[in-house]
Image 1 (cartoon, one colour):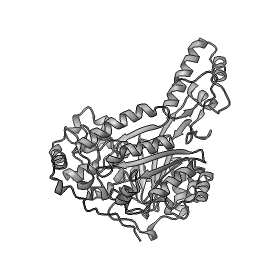
Image 2 (cartoon, chains in turn purple, yellow):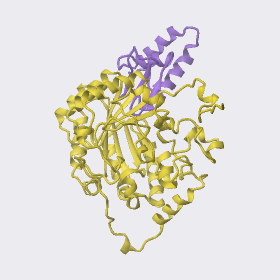
Image 3 (cartoon, chains in turn orange, blue):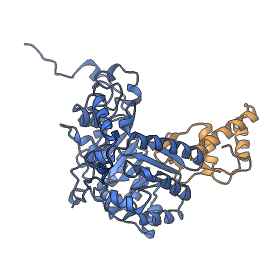
Image 4 (cartoon, one colour):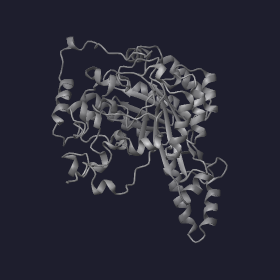
Length: 91
Length: 382
């Protein structure tokens, strides 16, 4: 399920990032773990219940200014839907 | 004078090798348990209380595990809550940098203890159910625990931690599957597991009473497929199939010595829950060596690591990278040879043994023989 642009995704209960000192950065969840790098880490770090999907998209547009903004937003929505179906985030 | 080359010292053995990194640690903190489930995965010979590792040894082990690359620790048993230092152990594992799961029956626990566990850093609470009703749960566990588990679920609502409901399913409780699903839909946990009994330890001793029929399995698959669709995005539904009915074996523990380590209550380090059934296996103990040393060089971990030990048909099979030849313990228990293909595999020369067991279960029986079986209950070690 894709989120609305006004939704504020946050990590689901029992899901957290490992510590900054622990590399590679990994999303820890019940019985599973997901290695994160580049954009996936940036997105997950912004899933804090405060940033809207729109705000996350804008941050990514600024970070990846060479890419087409609409394409970034589409990728973001797809990734958030995947994390949601895996019960890694709520929105 | 002739020099003999010692056996096993081949060029290949002298090459530097890349060892897999352990990712998960199963910490069997105790074999004591208030429940007496007939399918318990503990070995028939249970560790006694006086042989259990003390708090400070576990604390060191958690630090060593994290340093070796382990991400997650599962506190299990027996019943991990039977340890009086459980809150301290959760805090120590979390401080070491591990993700901490408690695999529990929910007994003995009160609201204050649950809050203390969460405050100490518990990440995930996996609550086991023996059925959907008190009557069935009691028959399976020989204990009254079901009403208490429902209370624990209410307490859990006050905390923001991961919750998994785990229903162990088998011939004697599959008829309650729909009621189990109702419980799931009422509570809405992040994950629900319907784990078919696997036949080791006490479960193997009670196999005749526990192995589901083909009809029950088909019913299960259909119901859980519907549930998975219905609960998508709310609760993740995991179904552990009864592997006797499978076409190919399970990739047991993700491959021997590839991902997982298990420490028994007395500190012995095993590649899986059941490895002690394999004759001649010797396990090293965390009391004498570091976890990394044991992972890298313990003969028990080397024994079935990689593919050199494989026989045909595994040796030349394309699926060997997917299922690693299945389960070594099951190969020993059913075929008498731990290095043979897991007999549940349809390609195994010993598959006939599994088919004979299934045929007996699926044979229509006259009603008079459908009486309640006699169970062998797991005792509580002193």
